[in-house]
Image 1 (cartoon, one colour):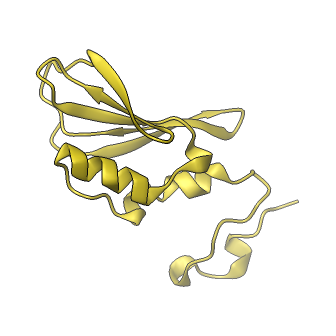
Image 2 (cartoon, helix red, strand yellow; image 1 turned 90 degrees about the vertical axis):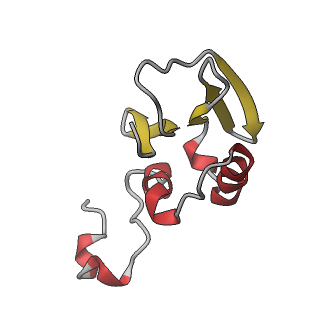
Length: 113
C-alpha cells in the first residue's frame, strides 16, 4: 500500500473509532503501539516504521494534533478534505452536516423527519 487512507468504524450509526493507514510494505504487521497525542495512537511495524494512526475518539478529532504527529513521524501533512468523514461521522444522525458551496440545494443537507 503506497497511499494513506482513512477508515471509520460505526456502531449503531455512530462513529466509534477511526484509523488512518500510512503507507505499508507487503507483510507489515503492527508489533507496537504508542500514544502520540490526545486520542491518537501510532502503530509501528517490526522495523520501527509508523504504519497507522488510531483515532480513538472521532468526535474529538483535532486535525492540527494529527498533523503534528505526522510531522514527528516524517510523513506528509493530511488535508482537511482527506479527513472530512470525521466531522461528519461525529455529528448525531439527525443533525445536518456543514453546508459547502458545491452542495446544491439546502434540501440536500437537511435531515428528513
